[in-house]
Image 1 (cartoon, rainbow, N blue to C red):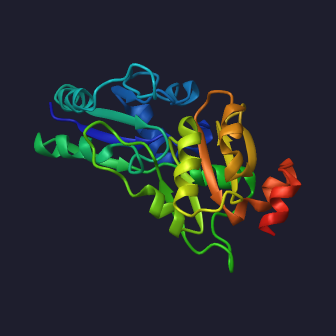
Image 2 (image 1 turned 90 degrees about the vertical axis):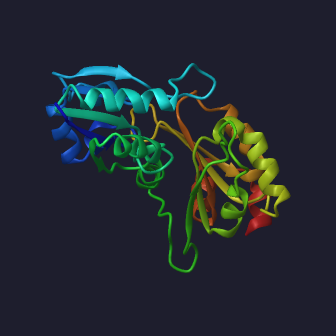
Length: 251
């Protein structure tokens, strides 16, 4: 048998943010390889599938990427519908290209099913547009995370040059993120928001300015969090109660 591997976006967490195609494929799946952050309600949409956790969490034991890719190839030789379920969107910080390369080299059919990425879910949940006429004409999705044996990243320059930025996998390195951005010329009074567990019942947000980012990160509950920067977050920061002195300096 030679099946098809579907790289499916699970979205930010809420099961009803899945696409119709994603839900259909989960119902048809023979086997599902899923990330650590995929919600249990989402996995329940695959009642007949064998479910295998292959997620990666910072600071915790995780499955090597080459092993995941091999498991996908092997599964496609035994099953008709193989789902690789990734949090958010597979093509954004999901290492999908490595899996696509492995599947292509093995002659395995594959298809990518997009999902709602966390930055868009956070913008919707907080009612803050990432773009705004006259204020924000550019948006960058970046991460300060660098894997072993990888070259240095230019994420700081990308964030500095954009009107609005969403930083993935950055909350745990809040102090270093703050330090590097300020050293690169980003104002310490730049409005920021830290959105945790977006779209889920336990969602929460902290907001302030870049200089306060480490303190904001310390108050999070341990769930997946996104760091958001830019002038579009000023009103949110004011509502939540950022220091009036700092806001006055940025007015």
